Length: 388
Image 1 (cartoon, rainbow, N blue to C red):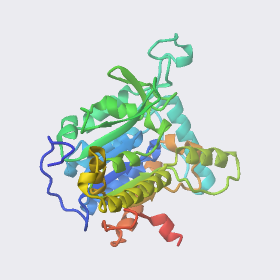
Image 2: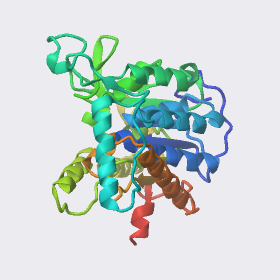
Image 3: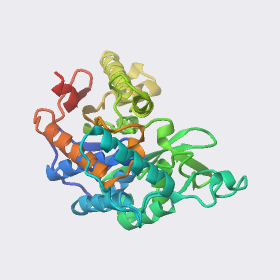
Image 4: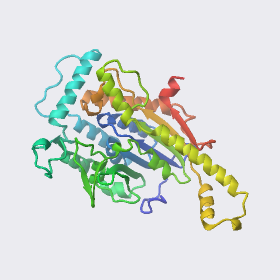
């Protein structure tokens, strides 16, 4: 029985050596989210299913589809979602010319992104009517460029929310309360998750409308933090945690050579995950807790206050974490519109990249385990390993 979710059924799935829990952490990134679907496919084919799925924005959507379906249905549902939202709107013909070379492909991607801006994407979002600039102040159409009602219906068709809230896989989605500016996670251990919680995590302004939940309204969690890694680590307890952190924007990149490069690189830096900061803080905290544990062992319990005994108990139960970092590396022809360029060809390429990178990561058998480490955290990155 999951201690964080007493209603969850007993879980007897197999796990890698030394591992008691598997986490899948999914960053926001719009159309790039097909990379995460490829990551999940590789994990699924390797028999690795997550115990905890946490996401922001498109990561929250992919995460809900994964956690809200039985393992044997998850891959099919992901395919259905991505095939739906990358289909061409009715009346739009296929690209009429062969695509060979970076410039023709960049042109095709630019036109596909423009099409999404003008007409929306099936099963995802549609332009507001009337346009917000022509809507009266306070009208339901006045605060976003697009309507996400199609996404609500897509989620209802692809996610079993009853299962999502009661199965053995924990799920969390990050969003921002608009009035307070505070970051919040909707988590199946504390909330009953519905389509609105998933949509709130991906309500990126000014494109998408705010989502009301209870007395508050929410926007995309990526406005504050584009990765939910800290939420997962804060709730690791004393688990031996194998974490797959999937990022869609790279914090490392080349110097720009033209204005398109500038816009793309600026977006990468703005939305790249805070993974390094979170892991550095985690290592420092873990080291401090280990020092405290050693000090507490030298002091008799009767000499400690109730607060100090509680802290001693916490320090006695520390997690061990192995983090496998998977980062999408953009193609040469992709520009700043890569996160809202929803062509089917790009989706298939992103998916294939996630599948390829994850298979390469899983090939390092010595990484796929959780062992005692001096800092409590081991990190592996297939791309940095390839660079030596």
